[in-house]
Length: 517
Image (cartoon, rainbow, N blue to C red):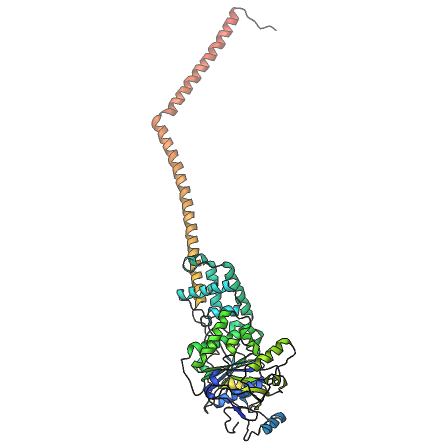
């Protein structure tokens, strides 16, 4: 778009509606039912920021936004819109794009470490209850105290296994650690890994400064995260983007009021961020959104219904584009009324009625002026994008990826020594020492058995020898004496028997004794 003020020109009613660069970091909201033109509005805003030299981060849920890298070919509807809005000098052009993908398939990989994610976001990612979250916090504390790096899922898995097997050793210093809670966290980690989250954790970790680049012409680079596959796991998607926001908040220095943002962050399908989020996390989100503008970052939520955003966050959305809403159900009607009341009143416009009447590409628009005051809401047509509407081919995407300044930085996974390796070494060392101790004990037992047997044999031999010596000392001629005694006894016995026989024979003969027949 080469016409006057193209860098900030977004929509037109009776007047041109421009987004004020100094107020672009006061955040924004794009809402509307499916098919009403939210994606094209996001594309037009991204082009505007790029022309201002402001880098952009946005998620490409359906793959449609990849066309922003290529000049559009105006069709009949585009030409009609250009003519209706009297856009003199309108021209098609592509914009500098950097593709990212958690899975590394449609862009450069984006990773973080377990430690950088932290226990709060991990608890949300794992859907833990309060007790389990407490145990996870203790696990991080134990890792910190022991100097254990938590880089990827296998590090956290190994740490939990180590704590579970040795939890009694941590009771005094850290309190009771429930085996059931450890087991529940381990099971949820397994589910998370099956959903593909292992791709998200590891090194090299993503450097947020790689989002804030401009090309040789000074245009801001548009960072597109391929989210079509990531959206199959909504909890991973929303937690990943929340982590990215928190990293921007933690890493960027205070910038004060800048002439234009350092980065604009579009959070598509924003309702996923707030679904079932515990209060502590909602408080954290509110804090980040409230304070991150002082770091020079503008956050723009994209969702179907303004009721998807908590009031505490909704109140901070200064720049608003409201596409058509349907009012078929009581909740829809409530959303229409809520949306109508958030705009600065325009006496010439019935906002509540207009919300249900808006056509495709038409919206209620209110931006902040140079003083930060919301402009009166206008019913306007969104400008047509200069870039292609719809996706580019996979071959075109691959060429852009390979020409990127960050190509090769994140493609190769690093696996340096961390908790997994250290704990594995400890387990191996413990097993080795146990094995050595078992072998030493078995050897000692065997030696003791042999010693006992030898001692018993020695005692038996000694006893035998003592007995023999004792007998010899007490009766030195015992065998000779026994022989003599036996001989004398035998002689006497023989003599006595013979004498008795002779006497019986003699007396019987003398007295005439005879045996009766």
